[in-house]
Amino acid sequence: MRKLSFIVLLISIYMYSCNSTPEDEKNNVDNFVWQVERFDDYRILQYKVESFESLTLKQKKLVFYLSQAAMVGRDILIDQNYKYNLAIKRTLEEVYKVHNKEESGPEWDNFVLYLKKFWFSNGIHHHNSSEKFFPQCSHMYLKSLIATVDQSRLPYQTGQTEEQFIAFILDIIYNKDIAPKKINLDAGADLVQTSACNFYENLTTKEVNDFYEKLTDQTDSVPPMIGLNSKLTKVNGELVEEVYKLDGKYHVAIKAIISWLEKAVTVAENDVQKKVISLLIEYYQTGDLRKFDEYNIAWVSDTSSKIDFINGFIENYGDPLGRKATWESVVQIVNDDETKRTKILSENAQWFEDNSPIDKEYKRES
Image 1 (cartoon, rainbow, N blue to C red):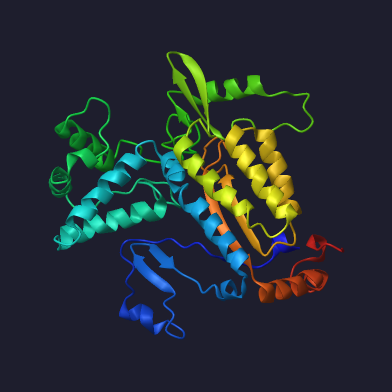
Image 2 (tube, rainbow, N blue to C red):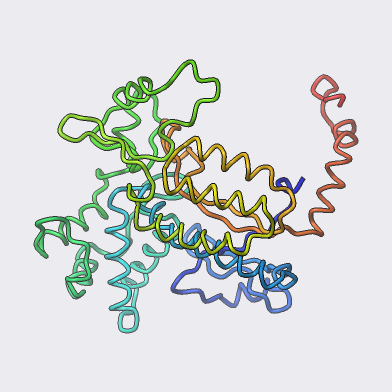
């Protein structure tokens, strides 16, 4: 029942600028600012997590460690969304650090708006539409800002001069023909070649499908989700699979995640939860997808812990082929009051089914 419980999200999105407006204040209850910020078609919300105060010190430590394991992995998601996202992120953030206290006016406001949209969407593509969005500040204005940043702090590509890097990064940001859509599902298009997501490189859809078809064991009654946690690239004509694991792709971030998970094990609520976290650590260490299956089975069986979490390469809808998973993490606290209400609704599901305003042929009798 716990896995279906009403839960409260603990981790919020934090931004450099988090001021509410007078309009927001009118909607507050008990002076709690629920709308942290609003811009473009985005809203940043926060929620009261009153149940946090009722946790034991050990449980609070567990929440902290799991939250840290969530935050240190965010750059994985940003990189998976587009191969140059991290270079853009670092450049924009360095500009913000240098100019935030001195710049003002419409051009600067438009630059900050673009940066906020980038943070929210974890990249240069809209989180819902998948379409690339663009700065409303001018190309020349952003160029002038980047040129004043300490060049040793910018993510130069191999062999680039300062001038070449600035031209390179601005072309990616402003050029409508570069990475126009993160996930393209248009009929007739090569979905791999026309999608900007960073799961495949120098490959066609056919090459990807042929590669994984050869790896699939048709006699395996419980096959692992082959390709779920890797990037597939073509190097010198050969297909190479880079697995996300310790000493593999995303090693630095995964090492940090493991470090915090190891701390979380020491304050686990019970043996089942300890097993769940330990299996996740083993999965990160090895990249073994059968170990990932073990972890998921153990996670589902944990029905008594107060603290719940998701951490890893889970959902595959960021890949146009539905094979690769993007990294995500959420930390949750079971809300006992809402769980009781949910349980009552669940126990009376048949009544709602019987009395719903739909034709009888569509109703379930049990």
